[in-house]
Length: 86
Image (cartoon, rainbow, N blue to C red):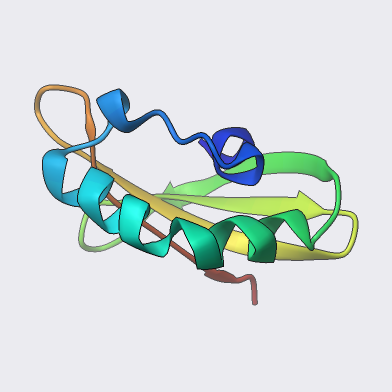
């Protein structure tokens, strides 16, 4: 998903309709922010949050993000968010 966002070509078919719509609306801000962090270096699973998301730390050459992903029963990404890693 992260590589797709950096490329500006998210896989909308893997997302819920709501997330796909939100991603389309926010892509112009998300894509350059992630691309500005430089090359992807690693993705580390950190655990499952209290509300059920899978939590990952995503390291780039110029920073890191915490990425949370909620999956729906059909296997699509129901929701996702990112923020600077702590």
